[in-house]
Length: 282
Length: 317
Image (tube, rainbow over all chains, first blue to last red; front, side, top):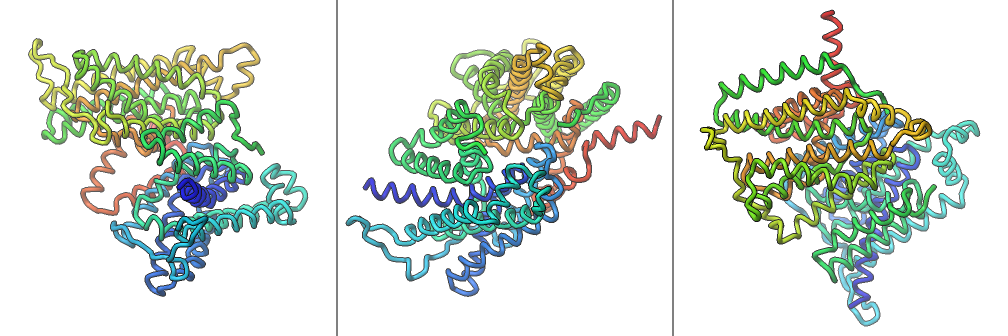
């Protein structure tokens, strides 16, 4: 029983991680709080839904939903986000708040207000025995996707030259530019990548939670909390933060359902009280 | 953070125009118009509370709906459970909101821009989550059966929407008067100085934290009054009132109106609420239009409608 809880918590943590990592890198590079990050997650799920409905292939949806979401992210970056970089936070909040409105209504107009579901592919529709407990293999797959992304990002950011350039642009953009690092290009690609990962989170949770308008708001605040808790701009922070919030939320909901929501915020408030810059300050 | 709009003459002119418009449409309006005006007036009070800390204090709160909720619930509980008259309950909610504002403000006012936004968002959502689960506060059903102030002794029937609109407008005027006085006072000047260079003010011995906490508490109290009036208008509270998007919409109102001008916040609340309401009657994709509208204003109208008015004022001179 406890093992099932742990796996559920892990699966939720991985979804949060996919969302938070994009947001945190975007924040680190551009000092922008993108409140519309949840909308990209929702849009990713809906794009996946359409691909799934037309091709009846979950795998195509899994690949192309994130790619198309990344494309939307790239367009948004070029049209909007590029211009509000370093603007005062008020403007960023309002512009991205406007995007939430646009995202929600576009989804309603294009796909309707009903909630939809995507079935997991045949390969993953059964249950596996984990230490004699049956557990849906699709959820294990989501955990796996999360870990693959986590280790890939960690490897790329910490061990490759491109990663070093990204880290340099986060830590000190001016010096990075002096060293002939094209920070604009890095911003463009990381922004698109971050949005793509939000889309990936959307399509991977679609078979578990379904696809409906309003799913953006359900994850947005938790994602923001993960980012603030972990320390904006830090990959390690996003990992630790999403695990912490994922576990606190999942276990809280089972053992103390009345207080589950409040505990998350309390964890955040306490963390910020003692570590105002988050757990991992960059 | 850029300097906040400050133009006392235009502020007063705009206020007088808005007040006349409100009075005229209230007197000649239908039952529904009067209700609508009361709603706009209450939203304006909320917008002013956000405007005051955003412009003077440089604090952008995405959790101010919490204080709206504190005012609403405190007012309901004081009248229903403790038998305090609705009118005094509104006065008490100011105290409740301001005291909670001092406690919260003490911990958060010195956080930097984005952290402040995130922490207020999280606190607001925490309150929202708590309200939804609390049996004492009625959970997701909220509380109903809240009465309006009773001035029948004076021959005034508050259940008449004409009268209640005037009543909310009186509150608005009082709060407007106090907030403008504070903006123009040494406290307002101090807050301006702190916003522009916090470290320098600490270095010359200014009380950064104390001033910012006072500003936050004041704003919290004002938002609570708005909450209290809101429940009296509707007769019930829905916990939805404390959702963070309500704070977000409040921020939209002040940027549409023009941050820092106080009467601009009222203009913003009026314009945004009318557009939201009218548009949602005509088309069902109004959120799309409004979303693009917000983006347009953020990108192209730096000081919102207030900026336009200032330009007009310059032309006329």
